[in-house]
Image 1 (cartoon, rainbow, N blue to C red):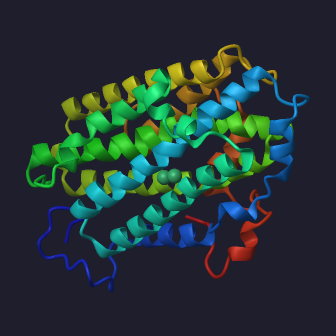
Image 2 (cartoon, helix red, strand yellow):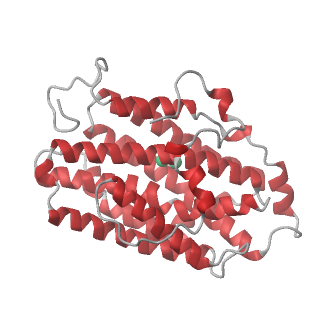
Length: 330
Ligand code: FE
Ligand code: MN
């Protein structure tokens, strides 16, 4: 039985399981359950409405990130439900994909909640993926590179099609969720560290924790396909993927500089760029590709929240209430 291209797999028969990592990601996802309404936005509303706390630069950074994430979550959800789910017939992976789809719905809900509570114009925020070039470029890039897989006649049969599918997985899991989300995470968490927009910041923390699981699942899926279809993973294809990821990195750097042109809160804009390089190396290594930058992590404070694998007590506040059995070790 294989994870894709397998006619023996019965998608309805989950036991006995073959891919225990998928099951573990599912359980970790359940343990991380949260909803946006549990986070108070009262202080954020006060800060947003007053002129005393937030400068123009900070407002721009907040709007750009709400603008990017508000629609990026739907783009990823569509990819899971309309493309990935059809190709991955293995039942424990599908159980995880359903969980991930639910989490993306929660994330979209989070941006509805932020828009509502801050009194932002939803047409402005939810159209930024079309009207703001640095956001549009990122979204167009992943949509373009994954459009083969969206064709309802697409199948992963054969080396070339399996590669196209891996392209899709790299596009959404590694580039979108693994790179395009991270300049924004760093910016919003930096604000929160300064006690600015702490409600939005807390929600970004929850999203980031979910996203690091999505990324982990995506990388495990890619690595499993590599192991099961080693002929796909030749040097030429590896180079193609590295080039693709590097192209994505350029878009993310542009976005970071656009959202925060002169830096903010004592962080210069270049540090967000360095952070993007740092996390890109981690993503490359995770799927067995050579790192490209060797940049030092400019925000060591991010790593305790990003690296869920080391996560134990960082998210003490609310999360523990949801925890039932199981642990976060994987
Ligand atoms: Fe998400
Ligand atoms: Mn996600």
